Figure: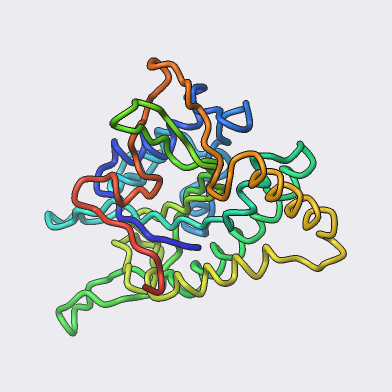
Length: 280
């Protein structure tokens, strides 16, 4: 499944997408916290952004600043309210359950296959949804031109905690998903930077999700053990917990209930923003 949310605040975007990396209280199933973010995209390479995402660099590009020189990447329009688009690529529910219940080898296999699918989706979006706006002096209007995207990738292994208002019990579901955060700035073909032309992102999101699912469905010989483990893990979960997703942290102390009640889709928690499933 793939969904798209709008990020409308630099501060909230940084806090939401990075808090699971720094906050050891969010180590639900892995006991290791979430992985650091990674840079993807030709636009990121043009800015010298490689490897791990830092809060400073992430905030700079969301703000339309060069991460090294702090210079403006382009003209900032007063009507610009969206700082980035959050493309979330989610693994199937049974895969997320197996990841939560599996051993280290099973988790590593699932994470590698999921990452291959996300990488293919990101490459597809760069090839087909990489567009920016540029003013045309002849037509006196901003027109779409091809551009290189900047993408910050964050892998999350669970949904956000939810607190029952009646009982105060905190629960969380396993949900392996990756956020591809695409800032509202892209490098145009002439080397300059401009605002992202977002319509192709929405138009190609469903295809990107289909590509991710296809790549994450490798040959049977490669996944025989994984398929067997998936069946056993789901049967085990249904036997122990019923048909719904696992519910954990029922006795979580009050001082560890950080982030309670938030939805996992960024667009839903940023004021004024929204998230929607591609293809709806």
